[in-house]
Length: 204
Image (cartoon, rainbow, N blue to C red):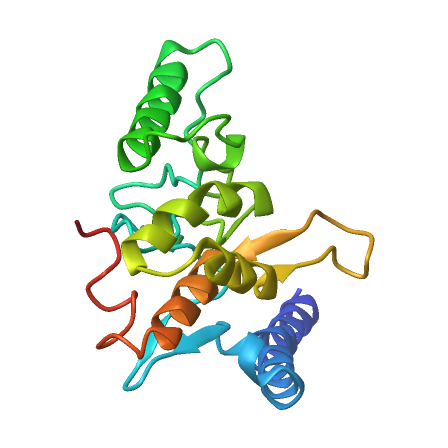
């Protein structure tokens, strides 16, 4: 009995050290050395501090910014601590109501909007998506260009620059990182204080 207890304690202590300290430390050191940007949260830096992560969306409401995919997280959108979808089924009337209100909002900003892509009016399963489809970006080019006093071709060229292709040329679909694109727009405009992550997100 005592021998079994002694063996159990030794194994517990050994596994605690290996899995609780040695393994996490090894993985952390390796990640920091080989993938420093990714292991640090893929943060996009501003002048004085990070403005957000390239992996997590942000809410944008001003007309001079591209909008990302809606988020259903609570209590705030794009809340990484509460990643989730709305769990509304396709026959749920609340889903249709939410979609229609988002379509109406887009048309209020640009009355000429037609054929709204699904990713601009439906929340993702995670609620954190940082990307939109090229079609969703194209729909917003006219509004953003008008709000910034630039030509649509200039804005469209920037969208093309920040459109990411399929991973390894096979996986997923082409996509546009909204935060990267909005930061690039500000940079071309001479830079705004702090960038969109500092006071421009989710504010009229």
